[in-house]
Structures are given as structure tokens and as C-alpha cells.
Amino acid sequence: MKQKSSYIIAACIAAAVGQGCTKDFTQINTNPDKPVVAPTTNVFAYVVEDFAATYFDAWGDMNEPETYGGHLGKIQYVDEARYKFRTGTVTSLWNAIYRDMKNAQLVIGQAEKDKAVNMQAAALTIQAYMMQIGTDRWRDMPFSDAIKGDSGYITPKYDTQETIYPAIVNQLKKAADLFAQASDDKLGEGDLLFAGDVTKWRKFCNSLRLRVAIRLSGVNSDLSKSIIEEVTGDAAKYPVFESNDDNAFLIWPGSKPYIEPWNSDSQGRDDHGPSAPFIDTLKKYADPRLSSFAHPAPADGEYRGVEIGPVSSPTISLYSRIGTIYRDVAAGFSPFMRYSEVQFILAEAATRGWNTHGLTAEQAYTNGVMASMAENGVTDANEISAYMNATGVKWTGSVKQIYMQKWIALFKDGHEAWAEERRTDYPLLPAAKGSSYPGHTRPPFRYPYPVEESTLNGGNNATFGADVKDNFWGKQMWWDTRKGVQ
Image (cartoon, rainbow, N blue to C red; front, side, top):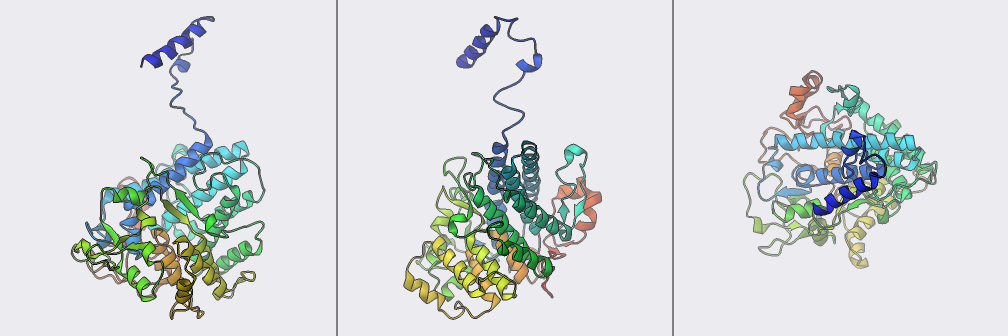
């Protein structure tokens, strides 16, 4: 306080040469430590960090998407894996989507005014990414009228996923074309994903275009094919991830408060373990990544996965815990997108006969598996060779092999694992035995709407809320074409 007072006094003495400290009341009421307008790069950093902290932590990822998608089970406090949700968590996740999308929009607007083309494109990319995660979680939600509260839209209308996905396609195309202008503006220190490397942002944008395209392949194959062939047909204009060095991982500093969210959870809790379907799949094919994905069970040193949503809490010493690089490192990572995912997308596109410009399905499939091996520290050539030649892994041309390897490689990205499981029905996961809603044959199709939507935006929410059954089921995602599931 003494130091601060000295600064104020010194300022007033300096101003006394004129007519006193100031005659401007607004000026003396302005706190320089709390600026009204933040630098664009700082807002951009906030968007990326806030989304990762919210959507890749225990509440946003581990408890629900990771268990719905089959990677994790819960060994203690098993409610969420049995679909017993917390209304506060639903509201928090819903609010975070719109909070971060609004802040991204501020970056987009300011960057456009400043003619900062790369910053505009990067913000468009991350905003489209967040909306893809959101619509894959809730399906229909406010979009075209959302984040417009300052323009009077306080009860925004809902848009269907059928209209949201094409809008995401167009936004990513706009971002890709802006990046292709080769502007020289800098992203600044707020680029937490790629440390200012615009080329990597370009690759992330176009890789996301591939993700969105393959998601639509069962409902709009013409659009899906056109996106993939446009991207792969012009590598100079539309580059994609080319190696694990391009992975869109947010690397956490590792000191409070910026600790990797899974590690932060582990410092006070021990609620999660790799699931039985996941561990059983790895053991079935003698997968050399097993020791990276999981620790042996404390009781007997065996790798053992926990049932997803068990009827009662299990004896926790009998079950494996999540592997070192995924949960034990404070300066760990949150995976937005991987190179291996891109290769599996291209492998699937090639099996459909689409033009991937010389890359065969087998080559892309092999690239994807090898990238995942490298990511998990597997380097022994004999182990890798034995695995790649194992029955069920050795390439036979089956798209289910692509789905299996993609599911394995997506570990720690529960959002994509859950989405792909709903799109492909592979692996075939039953609903949890201990489900709070008996009678369903598959894990949740969707996430519940916040209760506030029915009370504060009920006129717009009512029709869409009526499509929901048992909070988690009812109307399937637009791109979920499975028949006879409930």
C-alpha cells in the first residue's frame, strides 16, 4: 500500500506543473490494472485455456464422454458412468460453450478491424471446433442467434444440427481461405496451441475440415466427398497434419493453477480407470501400447479394466489406473486433434473410393497406427511388426479395422471417441448395467439440456426438449444413422 500510495503521489506532483492531478473524473476512476479492452492475443489465450480447462477435465470429459465412448470406467463414485448426472455440471458446460464462443467472436471482430488475417482465421477455426464439440453433445442448440445478447437476442432460437454442421463447414472453409492469403500478421503470445506457428494453425483448420466431412459421410456423402477431395487435392493451399509434431495439444505449464486437468483431478481423487472393453481389446491383440495407456492393478500386477457403470462400486485395488503420460504428469496435454486421426479419416475415405490423391487405405491405416505407436513411446520394431501382422490388426480392407484403431488412438479425447462410437457403432458398447434409465441398448445418444433452458428460454427450447427421452436418448444425432438402437 505504501508503494502504491507513493506512485499516486508522485503522479500528482508531476501533474501539479499544470492544473492539479486532473480535471477529468473519468480518468482518475480508470484502474490501469483492470483494462476495459484486453489485447486480442490475450482474449484468444483465454478462449483456448478456458475451453480446455472445462471440456477436458473430470467433469467435462472423464466422467461422461470418456465413459460413454468406452475408454474409461469409474471405480468410485460411479454415478456419472451410470447416467446419473448433476444439473450444475450440465449448466456449467453449456455456459462455457457460449462464453468461449462469444469471446472468440470478439477476437474475430477485432482481428477483422485490424486486418489481422491470421488471427481472424485462427479464431474462426477454434470457434468452429468448439461448436462442433457442442452440437455433437447436445445436437440442436442456439447457434445463428447465439452470442448476440448485446444485440438484443436474450432468448435465442434453436438451430438443428442439420443446419449447424453446414455452417461449421462454411466457417472452416472461410478460415482455410483466409490462411491461404499468407498474411504476415502475428498471433502473439496468446497462441497456446502452436506458439505462433501459423502453418500449424492452417493444418489444424484443414484437418478439422476432414473430421467434419467424415462425420457427415453417412448423411451427406456428396458434401463429405467434396470437402475431403478439395483438401487432399491441394496440399499447398489446404495443408493437413503431416506428423505427430503437428498435433493440436494444449501443453499445460504444470504449476498451479495451470495443471493438466486429469492430473489435477488425480491429486485429490482416485475415481477412474481404463474400461474393461478398452483393456480387453488391447490385451486381445497383445497391443504394445498397453503399458502406456494403463498401470497394472495394484492388487496383483495384472492389467484389468473396470466395467463401465458397474451396478455397485468395485474393489478398486483390482483395477488398472490411467497410464503415466495421460494422467500422472502435471505438465501434460489436452488433445484437441491428432495426426493419427487425420490418417484414419483418409483411410476411411479411400475405402469409399474417394480420391485421396495417391494415398491408399492401407497406407493411411498403417500411418495412423504407427503415429499412435510413436505417440505412446513404442519403438521396438519387433513388437510393432508382430502387432501389425496379428489377426484382426493386419490390414484386410475392412473399415471396422479403421474404426477400431481410431478408437484406440483417440484415448483421452472422449468427445471424439463418443461421437465416433455413435456414428459407427464400433466398438459395439451396451448401455451400462447399472444405468439409471433401464431399457436402453446403447450408451447415451446426447447430453441433457440445462434446466435453465426450459425456464428462461422455454419458448424456443420446448420443441427440442420434447425430442429428448430419459435425458440422454430420444432423437439421434443427424449423423447417427444406426437403426434399431435405443
